[in-house]
Length: 159
View (tube, rainbow, N blue to C red):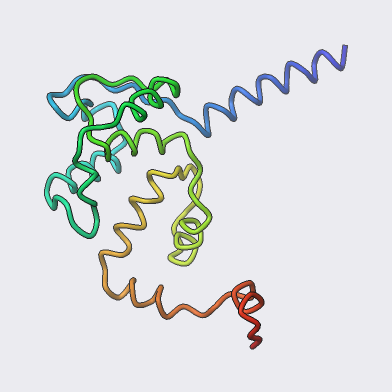
């Protein structure tokens, strides 16, 4: 009996954890952008608005505005992400990143600037970092940061 209870608790926990880590986004049609403003988080809408405003450059590479690839389309379908209309490579990349954990280097930057990591996904991490580095003082602070113990060990220096 206790084994059955343990299995049920494990399955329920897995389902909850899976939903927490990979939240689904169902997008509705909204012209050529492919998503409804009401169906995506405010930070992602802010990112899309910023991309429309500033265009290609330091924050958004030129590929960001190209039509999404067939690979991205298949990946969105495999991930259960629904959308209507046309998406750019950048928009598709952001939706794919919803189901991915931030990269280790991104986590290091976010921790350095005291950004909360709870509920952070790869797309949001990239967005937060891009916003951080819009400020030249932040760029300089990151460049001038002290080396970590791991970096010192790797390079053979000790402090």
